Image 1 (cartoon, rainbow, N blue to C red):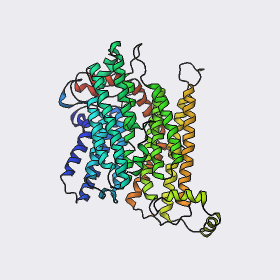
Image 2: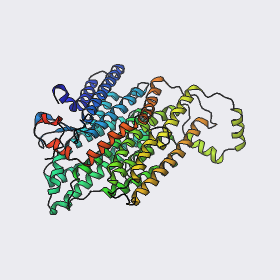
Image 3: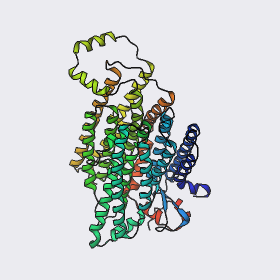
Image 4: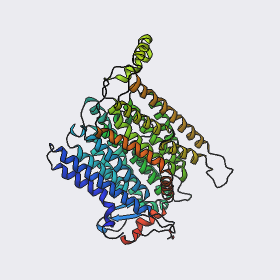
Length: 550
């Protein structure tokens, strides 16, 4: 990289920091100015993310190595200095974060950004922590950025106040503080054994750890893994997530859809980077735990969506299905499955974020406990009265607002359940295809039993989601309960429609995106280019693809 382009990797961290700190100096009553600054910073962040994506994606066809951009803060040599590393996976997550951030903030402009103090500053600090976690190249700064995003999320979790948010927020804070403590303990144990926290340097030193220290190393890695599986929401560590996400303010819940993917991202990155070297003393660490724990999470999420009696909790359990699917794909250890899972991650995260925003719109005009009342009427209501009301309502035109909300609800249901024609179907079809492909070099090898189990779970979870979404849609749009037509502003409806259009765009551009995720999965499963890129000498050499061996 040359000129100003070489400083692009630091921009996703510095830009939210400057924007958030600057908005703290502005009087809280000038919310319009703060909103404009927040939107401008996010739009700029999206542009930087796309630029980084172009840098790592545009590799000449003659090169077989992955493009890895390394930014050394203070020009200190690795492993002593702090480094930010941009590869295909990190750039993809930064772009996804900026898309969700933009739609969430636009939605909040209707009224939610006025529901509490310092919303825009907290939002920018959250983005700083998210981008830093995706870009950092060492565990200590991963801990720093992890704590930063959690601190901002605590404030956003309580945004809007209310008894339900305070109660769920206290649980959320307690669980994440415990996870942070585990994170710190795990990092300390790894440093005690290896003497370094740089991820690439750790990858080279872990195979050299003597057998006497092997148990301490694996203990530290296991504790570290538990800390991030809490954030990813893997069962049985996921009991806090549906309740917390369901009561958060809608724009907050929409951006929180990416928070669980931070844990998934780190598990994917570290499990394949630190324990990728083949040898008798180094085996795939924790792979079976990810495989079966992820499948348990999918099953738990499927049961949860069927049991949920309000749409917000249904969305919370959909987050668990999404995280469990990707974690299980990582546990298979197959690059093809990981590639399909990355496509699924993008599609499901966009749809879940749209659904969280949509829930607030469709619930307007409905009294508290309307879903529970609908269930009661189904079980104990007087059948004659229901039939009479249904007859009286024949011929009444559906208001335009409800029609648009209904179409948006159908779009979310199609993506989350994995039905055609939107991106959810392509994502699950790609996953099923990858699972049924022969894992070994021989063409007659049988499909692994775990792959059949995951295939069945994907189908069952999709069916459960379809049933739950259909039931919720009927209660919201067709139940004979008296309700007022919700007053929806264009600034609120636009982000929902934009996210669903993005899912439709994924359908149209599925082939190039799947090619991108396939290359991403190959580089993640074979991290030698990442290691060489980080540990190479001169900063000027980082833009040169390295695939010629050591």
